[in-house]
Structures are given as structure tokens and as C-alpha cells.
Image 1 (cartoon, rainbow, N blue to C red):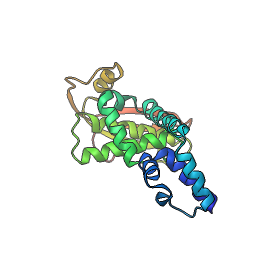
Image 2: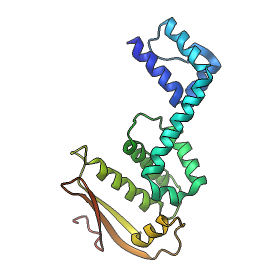
Image 3: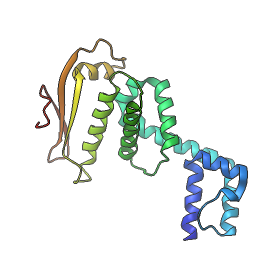
Image 4: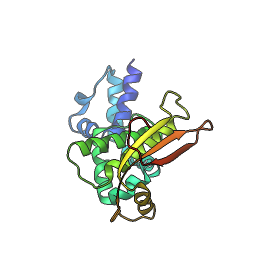
Length: 204
């Protein structure tokens, strides 16, 4: 049991900078779990090593790569400054608990959707985040059969023009209003396909 607590403490030093700083500031009193005195000493020796900061840099790079590679439209819409700010807030609120790219990216989408409900105002962000989250969920269906094989995303603006501008590296401008729905499915081969429908009914 103490070995598990020791491993958890070491991992937390890497993924939770607030915990790391607290241990550095007040010592073993900040440690949690059933640690023996020897294990506490080992944790204290690790927290003072320069390699810990290097490990944390690698961990951040890994998490950043997951988001950059799986959410291209969201990344382009937010832009580098806003993206960095939102990722920083996401990491503070959500320590990494998965090595899977899709899990991390879906969690970030959920974080952004929560931010939108709390008052964040960025035009088109709700539709883009909802679409990319749905796309990731469909991709995950290939390895988790319980995931629904259909996703429905409603748009207030033309998604085709919106996607085209973002893919070209442009910030969306003058995207015409278009009340429509994108319907995504996974075929028998595990491939994701989307189609556009002018209907907005829940019975799609």
C-alpha cells in the first residue's frame, strides 16, 4: 500500500505544480498517503532535483501535443494567445489522468464548453468545439463499442464555409447564417463519415 502511495506522490510532483511547490515550501507535512519515513525522504530528495522540472516540461509537451494534433479547428479558431490561456487554465483545473490522446482532448472540449456556459464569448467556438468533440467520440467508438455510433451537431452558421476558412488558417469572417445539422456515423470498418442535413429535428 505504501509503495502505491509513494508512486502517486512522485507522479503528482510531475503533473501538479501547486503540489510540488507546496512540498518544496513546507516539506514532508505536505505529503499525503501512507508513506513510510524512508519514502518521505525519497520524495523530498526528488522534489529538489533539477530533473524534476525537465520531466515536467516533457509532460507538458506531451499534453500539448495531444491537444494540438486532435483539435485543429478549435486551435485555429482560438488563436495562439487565447489557446495558451485556455490550456493553462485547463491544466490547472484538470491534472492529467490518461495517456490517451482522445481522452485528453475530449476533456479539454468539455472544459471549453463549461467556459462558454460560464460566460466566455468567442463566436463559432460552441459549434466548433461540439463538432470536434463529437468527431473524437466517434473515433473512440472503434475501440469502445459502447460509444454511440451517431453524433448530431447543430449549426447556426454555414459549417462548410466555416470549416474551409479554418482549414486555410484564416479567422472566420462573414460566415453566412445557416440553420442546419451535421450527422456523424461510424461504418462497419470503423471509419467516421459526416453528412449535412438542413433538418434540425431530434428525430434525425
